[in-house]
Image (tube, rainbow, N blue to C red):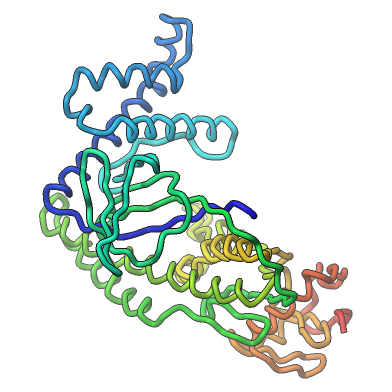
Length: 403
């Protein structure tokens, strides 16, 4: 038996009074985080000079107790939520000094509207097949859409607000037996026009609804640009853009989950390219003295890469494969799109278009992304040859791949 951590996210349907309480909880948690950050950032020298000790999680926890005694609106929020806020800040500082993240920043309203409870503080009661109730401390029973069954023991509960409303996320831990992995191996090429191409010949693309929402979003952004700053009409336009972005993210995440589940159920090993998405989506604007070239084209490519969500898919696929006894591995990405999967010829001329690959050496004809996926699959169990590590000239084709 192995332990697995899983998250379950549901949409809350609070009443008007509960909505005010949820916003009050989020506001107080955000306030405590910001003043705790300000104390650590601006007053740590004076504190150490006067007391001889540094500001820590323990000292701030003691001060939080005093604040709750003095201010009733702070005491109205569950102590657990405020303790979690201080722990988040302490963890952020630890990660910063370890070189893992940047320096902590202030939390903002409309962006960081969330708070967290312990799992044993909440109770869930089903209403029917589609709806359930969750009891949150000092808030009461809140209705939520039970879109799927909860598995395991609830460790913590996070309530958050975005453009589509309030949601609750349950972090659960469960034990299950890991089955024997499948012997099948699949190579996966991640692209822009074709989101996922498998070495089996399957082509998976994002739903068409994503592009339709993109058209609406661009129109909404143009309307937003014409609105006067600080006006009610601008706030409404901002909310409209945020809602469309949230819908896109939900559709994208649903596609990734469905595709990853299908792959994890059928294959024991999924092979991906080792891609540095951050570098690939860097801006081409350059500087005033040295402006970039093809800035508009690069901007469009960056949007396409980010819209495909390559990193999110890899993360989802990894944990789904792990639960089923499989694994996700990465291989070097160089020349996978220029190498012939049949004879090993590496030549840029073989990539006739975005979708077509015709080898200049043997005449092998295939979908370009499927050809790349086959190369990705082969590289997992075959060491790279020297010829695959150096670029060929545009005229002479080099042969030396695996037959």
